[in-house]
Image 1 (tube, rainbow, N blue to C red):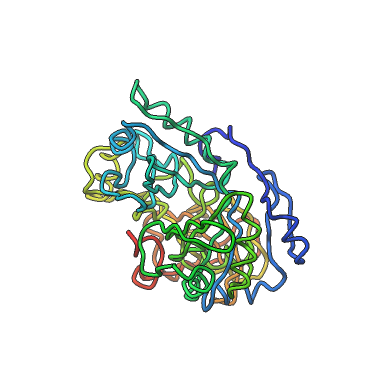
Image 2: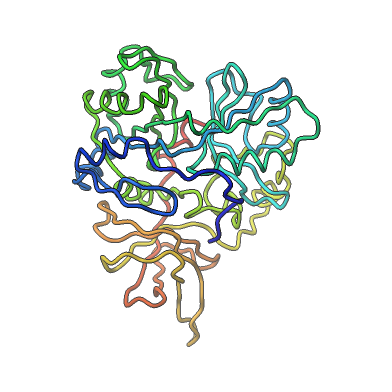
Length: 374
């Protein structure tokens, strides 16, 4: 899948890399900046995400601040999820769609005392600023890329709230909005967010205080983790990653982003298309998880094939792979064409001597991701 939107923003490495390396983490360089793969014990990191509290470095995320007297009505007429209904501190997963209804950007939107804040995937804040700016026609709206001063951490797992209470005694685990809390490292901002495919928490303080906050959360009982465990957790919950499993080539329903748009909101860019899909169906493909019969990684872009009536047919595309501790096998996410989406359907993986079996989507009631919050 191609990259969504032009990449004009910086793709920077975490400011905590030295801290991670000193702790023995495995770090790998990529075109998008260095990434922490693991802190040395992937099974323990995975268990923390399922049973305890997994701490992830999310300091590479982007941040776009939107202010001005016309910011609320401007965002309301452009974005796919509710805007005007958000009280100060509240937030939701949100989308910017194209006029044809495809996903241009996927981010978390929070209402602040000054306006709104879009927390984006790494490297996406500037691209989102450029895209939103195209819809401005003299309104009193300012779009400011605040990524350089933004350095959040994330917590996942059923023990995350207990860790936050230990680190931040004022923390209200039942809160649904942003909380500003005093701590030994200064004022800390805590808000609900989807983390590793589940409902978790995003936490940040001043950019220069990220290392101190990381240490505070570790001392309060969190387990440090990296991309390998995070990918295992999110693929098991059939949750896409932006620019990996979701891009401007897909409709939100194809990528299972139904929690990030509203059908009762009224007009917004692309609204007619997503409403028509909801009413009449018509998706040619949708994202699924498939269990792989071998332990070897499956490259993104691998085609999903079936032989029908003596003819080999191309019926899907793999977007990401991870090891699944739940299934004790490799697991891929991929788009599968309609009429071939029955659980148990077996596909050949092009160029590989192995097969993949389509799994039934998780019951939405079993997930504590942003669906529950929304």
